[in-house]
Length: 92
Image 1: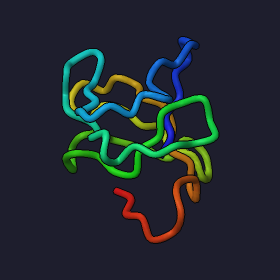
Image 2 (image 1 turned 135 degrees about the vertical axis):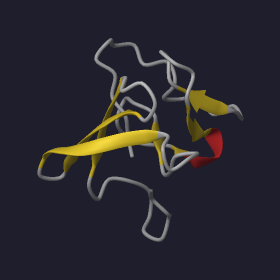
Image 3 (image 1 turned 30 degrees about the vertical axis):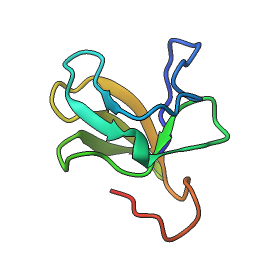
Image 4 (image 1 turned 60 degrees about the horizontal axis):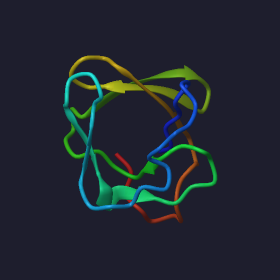
């Protein structure tokens, strides 16, 4: 899953220090740095969430899901079908 920011200047794309990524509005736990992978887009990308309720998503158009914080509904970006690391990696 890759996430996009509409505010420009994404600072976490190349950030690979150990830790937990949380929602910027409510501090809800979203992703572990262990699930982060290098991606060709300018945005950070993850293979799975920390908890089943970390995010919510709905299909915005075929192959593209809008992703929001599972607690407060803050927009996190998009998930694109068949976009991710090599096959066999778990996805949520």
